[in-house]
Amino acid sequence: MGTRTEGLLGKLICVLLSCLMVMAAASSRATIMGKVSNTKFHHHSERLRRNLLANGLGKSPPMGWNSWNHFWCDINEDIVKAAADALVSSGLSKLGYEYVNIDDCWGEQVRDENGNLQAKNATFPSGIKALADYVHSKGLKLGMYSSAGYYTCSKQMPGSLGYEEQDAKTFALWGVDYLKYDNCYTDGSKPMDRYPIMTRALMKAGRPIYYSLCEWGDMHPALWGFQVGNSWRTTGDITDTFESVMSRADANEVYADYARPGGWNDPDMLEVGNGGMTKDEYIIHFSLWAISKAPLLLGCDVRNLTKDTMDIIGNKEVIAINQDPLGVQAKKVRTDVEIWTAPLSGYRFAVLIVNRDQWPANVTTHLEDFGIPPKTSVTARDLWEHKTLETPLAGNLSANLDPHTCKMYLLQPIS
Ligand SMILES: *[C@@H]1O[C@H](CO)[C@@H](O)[C@H](O)[C@H]1NC(C)=O
Ligand SMILES: *[C@@H]1O[C@H](CO)[C@@H](O)[C@H](O)[C@H]1NC(C)=O
Ligand SMILES: *[C@@H]1O[C@H](CO)[C@@H](O)[C@H](O)[C@H]1NC(C)=O
Ligand SMILES: *[C@@H]1O[C@H](CO)[C@@H](O)[C@H](O)[C@H]1NC(C)=O
Image (spheres, helix red, strand yellow):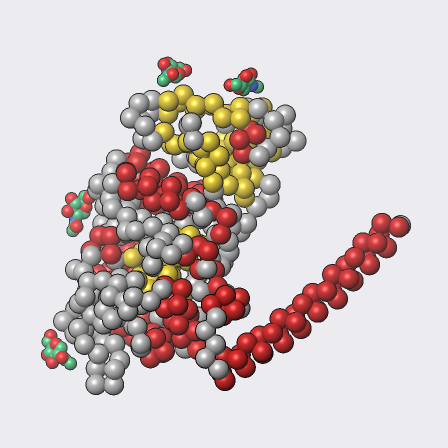
Protein backbone atom coordinates (compact mmCIF):
# COMPACT_ATOMS: atom_id res chain seq x y z
CA MET A 1 0.00 0.00 0.00
CA GLY A 2 2.68 2.46 1.13
CA THR A 3 4.87 1.64 -1.83
CA ARG A 4 1.98 1.95 -4.26
CA THR A 5 1.17 5.47 -2.98
CA GLU A 6 4.83 6.40 -3.19
CA GLY A 7 4.89 5.01 -6.70
CA LEU A 8 1.90 7.14 -7.71
CA LEU A 9 3.39 10.18 -6.05
CA GLY A 10 6.66 9.52 -7.85
CA LYS A 11 4.86 9.31 -11.17
CA LEU A 12 3.03 12.55 -10.48
CA ILE A 13 6.28 14.31 -9.64
CA CYS A 14 7.83 12.91 -12.82
CA VAL A 15 4.95 14.21 -14.92
CA LEU A 16 5.20 17.65 -13.28
CA LEU A 17 8.96 17.70 -13.76
CA SER A 18 8.77 16.77 -17.41
CA CYS A 19 6.14 19.49 -17.96
CA LEU A 20 8.50 22.00 -16.39
CA MET A 21 11.36 20.74 -18.53
CA VAL A 22 9.33 21.02 -21.72
CA MET A 23 8.34 24.58 -20.77
CA ALA A 24 11.93 25.48 -19.94
CA ALA A 25 13.17 23.99 -23.19
CA ALA A 26 10.53 25.88 -25.17
CA SER A 27 11.40 29.19 -23.56
CA SER A 28 15.15 28.72 -24.02
CA ARG A 29 14.50 27.75 -27.63
CA ALA A 30 12.57 30.97 -28.08
CA THR A 31 15.47 32.90 -26.55
CA ILE A 32 17.96 31.21 -28.85
CA MET A 33 15.79 31.83 -31.90
CA GLY A 34 15.57 35.48 -30.86
CA LYS A 35 19.32 35.76 -30.55
CA VAL A 36 19.88 34.00 -33.85
CA SER A 37 17.57 36.33 -35.69
CA ASN A 38 18.72 39.62 -34.21
CA THR A 39 22.42 39.16 -33.56
CA LYS A 40 25.28 37.32 -35.13
CA PHE A 41 24.86 34.38 -32.83
CA HIS A 42 27.52 31.89 -33.68
CA HIS A 43 28.30 30.20 -30.43
CA HIS A 44 28.81 26.62 -31.32
CA SER A 45 27.60 24.53 -28.43
CA GLU A 46 24.54 26.74 -27.93
CA ARG A 47 23.64 26.27 -31.55
CA LEU A 48 24.00 22.51 -31.38
CA ARG A 49 22.23 22.12 -28.05
CA ARG A 50 18.93 22.10 -29.87
CA ASN A 51 18.25 19.06 -31.93
CA LEU A 52 18.48 20.63 -35.37
CA LEU A 53 17.40 17.46 -37.05
CA ALA A 54 13.95 16.36 -36.01
CA ASN A 55 12.93 14.39 -39.07
CA GLY A 56 11.93 11.18 -37.30
CA LEU A 57 14.05 9.07 -39.67
CA GLY A 58 16.67 6.42 -39.00
CA LYS A 59 14.87 4.77 -36.08
CA SER A 60 16.78 1.69 -37.20
CA PRO A 61 19.88 1.74 -39.44
CA PRO A 62 18.94 2.48 -43.07
CA MET A 63 19.01 -0.40 -45.58
CA GLY A 64 19.31 -0.23 -49.33
CA TRP A 65 21.76 0.08 -52.19
CA ASN A 66 24.26 2.72 -53.33
CA SER A 67 25.92 2.99 -56.72
CA TRP A 68 29.46 3.94 -55.67
CA ASN A 69 31.30 0.79 -54.57
CA HIS A 70 30.53 -1.07 -57.79
CA PHE A 71 29.94 1.59 -60.44
CA TRP A 72 31.91 4.62 -59.25
CA CYS A 73 31.13 7.41 -61.75
CA ASP A 74 29.92 5.02 -64.43
CA ILE A 75 26.19 5.32 -63.74
CA ASN A 76 23.04 6.23 -65.60
CA GLU A 77 19.29 6.15 -65.07
CA ASP A 78 18.92 2.68 -66.58
CA ILE A 79 21.32 1.21 -64.02
CA VAL A 80 19.48 2.93 -61.17
CA LYS A 81 16.08 1.74 -62.42
CA ALA A 82 17.39 -1.78 -62.90
CA ALA A 83 18.83 -1.71 -59.36
CA ALA A 84 15.39 -0.77 -58.05
CA ASP A 85 13.80 -3.56 -60.11
CA ALA A 86 16.38 -6.03 -58.80
CA LEU A 87 15.79 -5.12 -55.14
CA VAL A 88 12.15 -6.03 -55.68
CA SER A 89 12.53 -9.13 -57.88
CA SER A 90 15.27 -10.64 -55.69
CA GLY A 91 13.07 -10.29 -52.61
CA LEU A 92 15.61 -7.98 -50.93
CA SER A 93 13.13 -5.12 -50.65
CA LYS A 94 10.87 -7.35 -48.54
CA LEU A 95 13.81 -7.87 -46.17
CA GLY A 96 14.08 -4.12 -45.61
CA TYR A 97 16.39 -2.88 -48.37
CA GLU A 98 14.45 0.19 -49.41
CA TYR A 99 16.83 3.02 -50.35
CA VAL A 100 18.11 3.28 -53.92
CA ASN A 101 20.96 5.74 -53.57
CA ILE A 102 22.75 7.52 -56.38
CA ASP A 103 26.29 8.58 -55.46
CA ASP A 104 28.62 11.05 -57.20
CA CYS A 105 28.52 12.02 -60.90
CA TRP A 106 24.79 12.32 -61.52
CA GLY A 107 24.79 16.02 -62.46
CA GLU A 108 25.85 18.45 -65.13
CA GLN A 109 29.14 20.25 -64.51
CA VAL A 110 27.38 23.60 -64.13
CA ARG A 111 24.16 24.81 -62.55
CA ASP A 112 21.37 26.08 -64.82
CA GLU A 113 20.65 29.77 -65.40
CA ASN A 114 18.72 29.93 -62.11
CA GLY A 115 21.52 28.34 -60.14
CA ASN A 116 19.78 24.96 -59.84
CA LEU A 117 21.57 21.65 -59.92
CA GLN A 118 20.66 19.72 -63.05
CA ALA A 119 20.78 16.03 -63.85
CA LYS A 120 23.34 15.09 -66.47
CA ASN A 121 21.54 15.05 -69.77
CA ALA A 122 23.74 12.38 -71.30
CA THR A 123 23.17 9.82 -68.52
CA PHE A 124 19.97 10.92 -66.72
CA PRO A 125 17.95 12.35 -69.63
CA SER A 126 14.58 11.81 -67.92
CA GLY A 127 15.69 13.82 -64.89
CA ILE A 128 15.74 12.96 -61.20
CA LYS A 129 12.05 13.66 -60.57
CA ALA A 130 11.07 10.97 -63.08
CA LEU A 131 13.57 8.60 -61.51
CA ALA A 132 12.18 9.29 -58.03
CA ASP A 133 8.66 8.63 -59.34
CA TYR A 134 9.84 5.33 -60.80
CA VAL A 135 11.61 4.26 -57.61
CA HIS A 136 8.59 5.27 -55.51
CA SER A 137 6.28 3.29 -57.80
CA LYS A 138 8.27 0.21 -56.74
CA GLY A 139 7.64 1.01 -53.07
CA LEU A 140 11.25 2.14 -52.63
CA LYS A 141 12.98 5.41 -51.75
CA LEU A 142 15.47 7.50 -53.69
CA GLY A 143 18.76 8.79 -52.29
CA MET A 144 20.97 11.52 -53.77
CA TYR A 145 24.47 12.79 -53.19
CA SER A 146 26.16 16.15 -52.84
CA SER A 147 29.15 17.67 -51.09
CA ALA A 148 29.59 20.39 -48.46
CA GLY A 149 32.06 22.02 -50.84
CA TYR A 150 32.35 23.86 -54.16
CA TYR A 151 32.45 20.58 -56.09
CA THR A 152 31.63 16.96 -55.34
CA CYS A 153 34.57 14.61 -54.85
CA SER A 154 34.74 13.62 -58.56
CA LYS A 155 34.96 17.33 -59.38
CA GLN A 156 32.57 16.51 -62.21
CA MET A 157 29.68 18.50 -60.74
CA PRO A 158 28.99 21.37 -58.33
CA GLY A 159 28.76 20.87 -54.59
CA SER A 160 26.16 22.52 -52.37
CA LEU A 161 28.34 24.92 -50.33
CA GLY A 162 26.61 28.29 -50.44
CA TYR A 163 23.57 26.73 -52.17
CA GLU A 164 22.28 24.65 -49.28
CA GLU A 165 18.72 26.00 -49.19
CA GLN A 166 18.33 26.02 -52.94
CA ASP A 167 19.63 22.47 -53.30
CA ALA A 168 17.62 21.13 -50.38
CA LYS A 169 14.51 22.60 -52.03
CA THR A 170 15.48 21.02 -55.34
CA PHE A 171 15.92 17.62 -53.68
CA ALA A 172 12.55 17.98 -51.91
CA LEU A 173 10.83 19.00 -55.17
CA TRP A 174 12.28 15.99 -56.94
CA GLY A 175 10.98 13.69 -54.19
CA VAL A 176 14.36 12.69 -52.79
CA ASP A 177 14.32 10.71 -49.52
CA TYR A 178 17.99 10.51 -48.52
CA LEU A 179 21.03 12.75 -48.89
CA LYS A 180 24.64 11.60 -48.59
CA TYR A 181 26.72 14.72 -48.04
CA ASP A 182 30.43 14.48 -48.80
CA ASN A 183 33.35 16.65 -47.72
CA CYS A 184 35.38 17.57 -50.83
CA TYR A 185 36.55 20.95 -52.17
CA THR A 186 35.47 22.84 -49.06
CA ASP A 187 36.29 26.40 -48.00
CA GLY A 188 38.44 25.03 -45.18
CA SER A 189 35.84 25.65 -42.47
CA LYS A 190 35.05 22.90 -39.98
CA PRO A 191 32.49 20.18 -40.74
CA MET A 192 30.62 21.03 -37.54
CA ASP A 193 30.03 24.50 -39.01
CA ARG A 194 29.29 23.44 -42.58
CA TYR A 195 27.10 20.35 -42.08
CA PRO A 196 24.40 21.96 -39.85
CA ILE A 197 23.69 24.52 -42.60
CA MET A 198 22.38 21.67 -44.73
CA THR A 199 20.52 20.26 -41.71
CA ARG A 200 18.56 23.50 -41.41
CA ALA A 201 18.04 23.67 -45.16
CA LEU A 202 16.62 20.13 -45.23
CA MET A 203 14.35 20.86 -42.28
CA LYS A 204 12.98 23.92 -44.12
CA ALA A 205 12.59 22.09 -47.43
CA GLY A 206 9.35 20.46 -46.32
CA ARG A 207 10.12 16.80 -46.98
CA PRO A 208 11.63 14.29 -44.54
CA ILE A 209 15.06 13.51 -45.99
CA TYR A 210 17.43 11.11 -44.25
CA TYR A 211 20.70 13.03 -43.78
CA SER A 212 23.92 11.03 -44.03
CA LEU A 213 27.04 12.97 -43.00
CA CYS A 214 30.16 11.90 -44.86
CA GLU A 215 33.10 13.84 -43.42
CA TRP A 216 35.11 10.61 -43.08
CA GLY A 217 35.41 10.78 -39.30
CA ASP A 218 37.74 13.79 -39.54
CA MET A 219 36.34 15.76 -36.61
CA HIS A 220 34.91 12.88 -34.54
CA PRO A 221 31.37 13.38 -35.89
CA ALA A 222 30.02 10.83 -33.40
CA LEU A 223 30.48 13.54 -30.75
CA TRP A 224 28.25 16.09 -32.51
CA GLY A 225 26.49 14.20 -35.30
CA PHE A 226 23.29 13.27 -33.47
CA GLN A 227 21.96 16.83 -33.58
CA VAL A 228 22.98 17.25 -37.19
CA GLY A 229 22.38 14.05 -39.15
CA ASN A 230 20.84 10.57 -39.06
CA SER A 231 24.23 8.90 -39.47
CA TRP A 232 27.83 9.95 -39.79
CA ARG A 233 30.80 8.28 -41.39
CA THR A 234 33.42 7.38 -38.80
CA THR A 235 36.07 6.31 -41.33
CA GLY A 236 37.62 6.98 -44.71
CA ASP A 237 36.34 5.10 -47.76
CA ILE A 238 36.16 1.31 -47.61
CA THR A 239 37.83 -0.88 -50.26
CA ASP A 240 37.01 -4.46 -51.22
CA THR A 241 39.63 -6.11 -48.98
CA PHE A 242 39.52 -7.91 -45.64
CA GLU A 243 42.07 -5.49 -44.13
CA SER A 244 39.91 -2.53 -45.08
CA VAL A 245 36.79 -4.13 -43.58
CA MET A 246 38.50 -4.95 -40.29
CA SER A 247 40.18 -1.57 -39.92
CA ARG A 248 36.90 0.27 -40.56
CA ALA A 249 35.03 -1.94 -38.09
CA ASP A 250 37.70 -1.23 -35.45
CA ALA A 251 37.70 2.53 -36.00
CA ASN A 252 33.90 2.58 -35.87
CA GLU A 253 33.74 0.57 -32.64
CA VAL A 254 35.50 3.32 -30.69
CA TYR A 255 32.31 5.41 -30.90
CA ALA A 256 29.83 2.66 -30.01
CA ASP A 257 28.35 4.64 -27.11
CA TYR A 258 27.22 7.44 -29.42
CA ALA A 259 24.98 5.38 -31.72
CA ARG A 260 21.26 5.20 -31.00
CA PRO A 261 17.92 5.23 -32.81
CA GLY A 262 17.89 8.32 -35.00
CA GLY A 263 21.69 8.61 -35.28
CA TRP A 264 24.15 5.89 -36.28
CA ASN A 265 27.88 5.42 -36.72
CA ASP A 266 28.64 4.62 -40.35
CA PRO A 267 31.79 2.62 -41.25
CA ASP A 268 30.92 3.02 -44.97
CA MET A 269 28.93 0.95 -47.43
CA LEU A 270 29.06 -2.79 -47.98
CA GLU A 271 31.46 -4.49 -50.39
CA VAL A 272 29.72 -7.91 -50.19
CA GLY A 273 29.40 -9.32 -53.70
CA ASN A 274 32.09 -7.21 -55.36
CA GLY A 275 34.55 -10.08 -55.69
CA GLY A 276 37.57 -9.03 -53.64
CA MET A 277 37.01 -11.33 -50.63
CA THR A 278 36.15 -14.94 -49.89
CA LYS A 279 32.60 -15.88 -48.91
CA ASP A 280 33.71 -16.34 -45.29
CA GLU A 281 35.30 -12.89 -45.26
CA TYR A 282 32.13 -11.34 -46.65
CA ILE A 283 30.18 -13.14 -43.91
CA ILE A 284 32.45 -11.50 -41.33
CA HIS A 285 31.97 -8.12 -43.07
CA PHE A 286 28.16 -8.42 -43.07
CA SER A 287 28.04 -9.76 -39.50
CA LEU A 288 30.22 -6.91 -38.20
CA TRP A 289 28.10 -4.27 -39.95
CA ALA A 290 24.91 -5.87 -38.65
CA ILE A 291 26.00 -6.15 -35.02
CA SER A 292 27.54 -2.64 -35.17
CA LYS A 293 24.15 -1.19 -36.17
CA ALA A 294 25.77 0.19 -39.31
CA PRO A 295 23.71 1.26 -42.32
CA LEU A 296 23.29 -1.83 -44.55
CA LEU A 297 23.81 -0.23 -47.94
CA LEU A 298 24.64 -2.82 -50.58
CA GLY A 299 27.53 -1.81 -52.81
CA CYS A 300 27.46 -4.58 -55.40
CA ASP A 301 25.68 -4.96 -58.72
CA VAL A 302 22.29 -6.07 -57.43
CA ARG A 303 21.16 -6.83 -61.00
CA ASN A 304 23.50 -9.81 -61.00
CA LEU A 305 23.58 -11.44 -57.57
CA THR A 306 25.18 -14.84 -57.00
CA LYS A 307 23.63 -17.37 -54.65
CA ASP A 308 26.54 -16.87 -52.22
CA THR A 309 25.91 -13.12 -52.13
CA MET A 310 22.16 -13.63 -51.63
CA ASP A 311 22.85 -16.10 -48.78
CA ILE A 312 24.79 -13.35 -47.02
CA ILE A 313 22.83 -10.16 -47.64
CA GLY A 314 19.53 -12.04 -47.45
CA ASN A 315 20.14 -13.57 -43.99
CA LYS A 316 16.99 -12.49 -42.17
CA GLU A 317 18.27 -13.48 -38.75
CA VAL A 318 21.39 -11.34 -39.10
CA ILE A 319 19.38 -8.44 -40.53
CA ALA A 320 17.10 -8.68 -37.47
CA ILE A 321 20.14 -8.11 -35.22
CA ASN A 322 20.90 -4.92 -37.16
CA GLN A 323 17.30 -3.70 -37.04
CA ASP A 324 16.62 -4.62 -33.40
CA PRO A 325 14.60 -1.82 -31.77
CA LEU A 326 16.95 -1.47 -28.80
CA GLY A 327 19.47 0.06 -31.22
CA VAL A 328 22.63 -0.59 -29.19
CA GLN A 329 25.89 -0.91 -31.14
CA ALA A 330 28.18 -3.85 -30.35
CA LYS A 331 31.49 -3.48 -28.57
CA LYS A 332 34.50 -5.74 -28.55
CA VAL A 333 34.46 -7.38 -25.15
CA ARG A 334 37.57 -9.47 -25.64
CA THR A 335 40.53 -8.99 -27.95
CA ASP A 336 42.67 -12.07 -27.19
CA VAL A 337 40.05 -13.83 -29.25
CA GLU A 338 37.87 -11.29 -30.91
CA ILE A 339 34.39 -11.22 -29.40
CA TRP A 340 31.83 -8.57 -30.27
CA THR A 341 28.58 -8.38 -28.36
CA ALA A 342 25.48 -6.22 -28.15
CA PRO A 343 22.41 -6.40 -25.96
CA LEU A 344 19.12 -6.78 -27.85
CA SER A 345 15.51 -6.09 -26.99
CA GLY A 346 13.76 -8.68 -24.82
CA TYR A 347 16.83 -9.52 -22.69
CA ARG A 348 18.63 -11.19 -25.58
CA PHE A 349 22.22 -10.85 -26.75
CA ALA A 350 24.01 -10.91 -30.09
CA VAL A 351 27.49 -12.41 -30.08
CA LEU A 352 30.04 -12.48 -32.88
CA ILE A 353 33.26 -14.43 -32.55
CA VAL A 354 35.77 -13.54 -35.29
CA ASN A 355 39.00 -15.26 -36.17
CA ARG A 356 40.85 -12.54 -38.05
CA ASP A 357 44.15 -14.46 -37.93
CA GLN A 358 45.80 -16.67 -40.55
CA TRP A 359 45.65 -19.80 -38.40
CA PRO A 360 42.79 -21.77 -36.81
CA ALA A 361 41.63 -20.88 -33.33
CA ASN A 362 39.63 -22.77 -30.71
CA VAL A 363 37.78 -20.25 -28.64
CA THR A 364 35.96 -20.59 -25.33
CA THR A 365 33.93 -17.62 -24.24
CA HIS A 366 32.10 -17.21 -20.96
CA LEU A 367 28.60 -15.90 -20.45
CA GLU A 368 30.10 -13.21 -18.23
CA ASP A 369 31.89 -11.87 -21.34
CA PHE A 370 28.44 -10.81 -22.58
CA GLY A 371 27.15 -9.51 -19.26
CA ILE A 372 25.06 -12.63 -18.57
CA PRO A 373 25.34 -14.04 -15.01
CA PRO A 374 27.54 -17.20 -15.20
CA LYS A 375 25.02 -19.68 -13.72
CA THR A 376 22.31 -18.73 -16.23
CA SER A 377 20.96 -21.31 -18.65
CA VAL A 378 20.95 -19.86 -22.16
CA THR A 379 19.66 -21.01 -25.55
CA ALA A 380 22.00 -20.26 -28.43
CA ARG A 381 20.93 -19.83 -32.04
CA ASP A 382 23.66 -20.05 -34.68
CA LEU A 383 22.65 -17.31 -37.12
CA TRP A 384 24.71 -18.53 -40.08
CA GLU A 385 23.92 -22.26 -39.64
CA HIS A 386 20.29 -21.36 -38.86
CA LYS A 387 20.29 -23.88 -36.02
CA THR A 388 19.52 -23.68 -32.34
CA LEU A 389 22.15 -25.58 -30.32
CA GLU A 390 20.56 -28.71 -28.87
CA THR A 391 21.61 -28.20 -25.27
CA PRO A 392 21.26 -24.85 -23.57
CA LEU A 393 24.59 -23.28 -22.64
CA ALA A 394 25.74 -23.26 -19.06
CA GLY A 395 28.70 -21.01 -18.43
CA ASN A 396 30.72 -21.36 -21.64
CA LEU A 397 30.36 -21.13 -25.40
CA SER A 398 33.06 -22.80 -27.47
CA ALA A 399 33.81 -22.56 -31.17
CA ASN A 400 36.56 -23.88 -33.44
CA LEU A 401 37.23 -21.33 -36.12
CA ASP A 402 39.18 -21.63 -39.35
CA PRO A 403 41.16 -18.57 -40.46
CA HIS A 404 38.99 -15.61 -41.48
CA THR A 405 35.74 -17.19 -40.34
CA CYS A 406 33.25 -16.21 -37.68
CA LYS A 407 30.39 -17.54 -35.60
CA MET A 408 27.36 -15.44 -34.81
CA TYR A 409 24.88 -16.33 -32.10
CA LEU A 410 21.67 -15.03 -30.64
CA LEU A 411 21.64 -15.84 -26.92
CA GLN A 412 18.50 -15.93 -24.82
CA PRO A 413 18.65 -16.61 -21.07
CA ILE A 414 15.90 -19.05 -20.05
CA SER A 415 16.25 -19.08 -16.27
C1 LIG B 1 20.12 16.20 -74.22
O1 LIG B 1 20.74 15.26 -75.03
C2 LIG B 1 20.06 14.97 -76.22
C3 LIG B 1 20.83 13.89 -76.98
O2 LIG B 1 21.17 12.84 -76.13
C4 LIG B 1 19.94 16.21 -77.05
O3 LIG B 1 19.18 15.94 -78.20
C5 LIG B 1 19.28 17.32 -76.25
O4 LIG B 1 19.29 18.52 -76.96
C6 LIG B 1 20.00 17.52 -74.93
N1 LIG B 1 19.26 18.46 -74.12
C7 LIG B 1 19.84 19.43 -73.47
C8 LIG B 1 18.93 20.29 -72.66
O5 LIG B 1 21.03 19.64 -73.50
C1 LIG C 1 27.50 -11.33 -63.38
O1 LIG C 1 28.29 -11.94 -62.37
C2 LIG C 1 29.18 -12.92 -62.86
C3 LIG C 1 29.82 -13.60 -61.67
O2 LIG C 1 29.94 -12.77 -60.59
C4 LIG C 1 30.18 -12.26 -63.79
O3 LIG C 1 31.08 -13.22 -64.30
C5 LIG C 1 29.44 -11.58 -64.91
O4 LIG C 1 30.35 -10.86 -65.71
C6 LIG C 1 28.40 -10.63 -64.39
N1 LIG C 1 27.58 -10.12 -65.46
C7 LIG C 1 27.40 -8.83 -65.67
C8 LIG C 1 26.49 -8.49 -66.79
O5 LIG C 1 27.93 -7.97 -64.99
C1 LIG D 1 40.77 -27.38 -31.92
O1 LIG D 1 40.01 -28.46 -31.45
C2 LIG D 1 40.02 -29.56 -32.32
C3 LIG D 1 39.08 -30.66 -31.80
O2 LIG D 1 38.29 -30.20 -30.77
C4 LIG D 1 41.44 -30.10 -32.47
O3 LIG D 1 41.46 -31.18 -33.36
C5 LIG D 1 42.34 -28.99 -32.97
O4 LIG D 1 43.68 -29.40 -32.97
C6 LIG D 1 42.22 -27.74 -32.12
N1 LIG D 1 42.92 -26.66 -32.76
C7 LIG D 1 43.66 -25.77 -32.11
C8 LIG D 1 44.28 -24.71 -32.93
O5 LIG D 1 43.80 -25.82 -30.89
C1 LIG E 1 34.33 -22.75 -18.65
O1 LIG E 1 35.66 -22.43 -19.01
C2 LIG E 1 36.54 -22.28 -17.93
C3 LIG E 1 37.88 -21.83 -18.44
O2 LIG E 1 38.07 -22.09 -19.80
C4 LIG E 1 36.63 -23.62 -17.18
O3 LIG E 1 37.49 -23.48 -16.05
C5 LIG E 1 35.24 -24.01 -16.72
O4 LIG E 1 35.28 -25.30 -16.13
C6 LIG E 1 34.26 -24.04 -17.88
N1 LIG E 1 32.91 -24.23 -17.36
C7 LIG E 1 32.04 -25.06 -17.93
C8 LIG E 1 30.71 -25.16 -17.26
O5 LIG E 1 32.30 -25.72 -18.91
